[in-house]
Image (tube, rainbow, N blue to C red; front, side, top):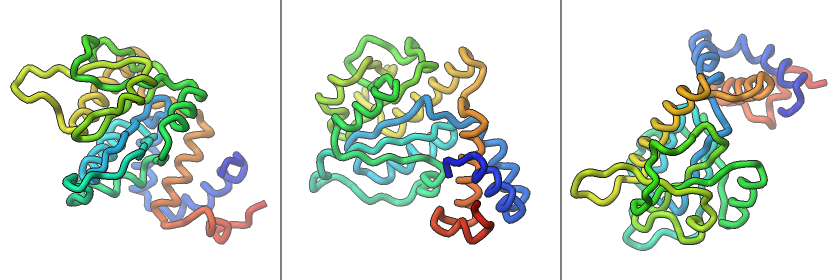
Length: 226
């Protein structure tokens, strides 16, 4: 779907098939999407947490979730949980990784800073410039991020905690971070979304296809591809 002409023709063909309400919703969502800010989940095995993170990412317009799995869940970890909103994942772009170095090098080669949370860090979340091209990493529910990922992080920051508890649930950490990032980006940049017109068209087509249950393999049945 990278060809601009193909995307335009596909949009023209599929648009009448999508309900007016869904087209209107997609048209309001796409301009606020961003790929310049993303989330990395390292060894987060609890699917309930992962689904909650996906829902929050969708709500704040963050497209890219990186799932890094380098160790299997331990016996007492809850891997399967009641569905929070697994459907939110269909509106995201999810990349799966099994090697830390491969993930980090891809991100840094594409100009991303890597930030991570640390309860013992003196740098507060309010001091972070979220307008920069960045991926924020969050770790395992029990252990946090690995030493390796911490070493690769360009910066670490903490979330304010004034009570007796020593940590937030990982999905809560993501929600707090995304709210701060959204407010910072709006305040400094005047917007959250940063996709080009061509990228917005391609994403709109992707959402049309998901809404209609059309795959890249069968989209050619709906019009004559040049």
